[in-house]
Amino acid sequence: MSSDSPSIVLRDQKHVYLSTKDVDTGAKLVVGFTSPLDPDEALRIRRKIDRHIMPLMCALYGIQFMDKTTLGYASILGIQRATNLTTNELGTVFYLSYLLFEFPQNLALQKFPVGKWMSINIFVWAVALACHAACKSFAGLLVVRLLLGACEGSITAGFLIVSSMFYTRTEQTLRVGYWFLMNGTAQVVTGFISFGVFQINTKGFEPWQWLMIITGMITVILAISFWFLFPDSPTNAWFLTPDERAKAVQRIKENQTGVENKHFKMEQMIEALTDPKTWLFALFSALNNVPNSLTNQQSLIIASFGFSVLQTTLLSCVPGILEILTIFTGVRLAAQRPNSRAYVGAMYFVPSWFGILLVNLLPWSNQAGLLVGQFLAETSVPGFVLSLSWLNNVTAGHTKRIVTNAIMLSAYCVGNAAGPLMWKDQYKPRNHVPWAVIGVCYVACPVLLLVIRAVLVRENRIRDAEPDDASEEYVIERITEDGKRVEVNIDKEFLDLTDRQNRDFRYVL
Image: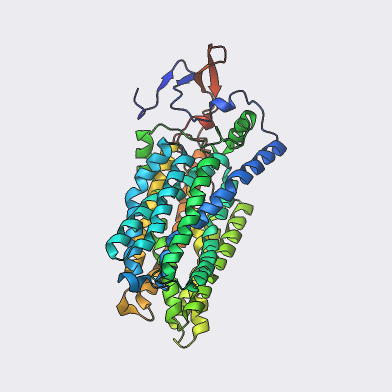
């Protein structure tokens, strides 16, 4: 039977037979759990999971951001002079490659073991990063930036899948925030690394080349660590005992999204493409990331205020510190206040509005004020972080989640690819046109978050008014240790149903 359609056979009015390929991979592990998991035991297992996967996730997300933004720091260390090109061109190339490979990467993450697939991508991108140092022309840099974009497409998508496998909805909000705020940490670390390599004076090897070699070596070490230490799923996590694996799966039962299903289901892909909330999240993602071009531009903008290379390098660390603080406070607020994701995300756009006004209205001589405006303009990051975990929380069905993540991250690429194109020489030094575009995006984004919330509230009300359909029992055939075939009941939460198919599913807000 094709994996495109569910192999369900109705035996009578009460029982529904299912093929094992149609149910979640965690279904067999939780057979026999008839009582809720002890809260203390659940907490112990969660802490054990945190200890083993969060340090690796945080380290990788920080390093991937560091690697991605090395181009911005290299621009003030001499790469533009050495290669006769602009960071705008390469910034767009990177995200176009990311966009091109986003769907294939998500499909590979469903087909292959998640941890191993990410490890391979990390290694390839580490080699490509180090190869930047050997490039002296646009053609060479084009190839390595294409490779970086293609490989990075697996990381955020893979982390969203892993977060949904191991954590409850509230925990996902916090943990997505924790690994995402490593972007800010990376900005600070890269700033100091750039300051260090600026002091290196070697004949025939420039500081920007040392920056690429150092960050490439760090990434190779992390790729090797990931291969051996990062789990593919709670069903086979090396650091959990067989009993703990079952409890880890039982712990996320409340998500009603299961762990994963390795079979691609065409009907779930079609549902993802026809679900309005998929495209609302995608539009938000695209608009929210047009201003992300500030990341690679900020060193050049700060330098244009009249600061030296040394001052610019150190001042470029400040947005990283702000990102850490805003993401940490944003996800904590959203986790502590039920159904507040849209409100919290929208709130963090307000300081950005003031920052944009300062940058555009203050006189060019007011360096301190322009700096404050530049920094405030980048405080809206919690909105995007919350949207990532929110989309993960309101999407069920593994294939559907894979497709919606791909669409969301493809839109992220579109925004990031478009952003660098607006920083043109004719707009310098005030760059009023790019800042106006950023202002429009930052007005539209909070509105979109509130629209998404209204759509989900309406759907929850419709479901609350529907009759309960808990009369059916779902059954799969299982082979016992002594070789006997037995029928076992499967909880609805582990049927790999989509959020539309499972009418008991309620959207978190």
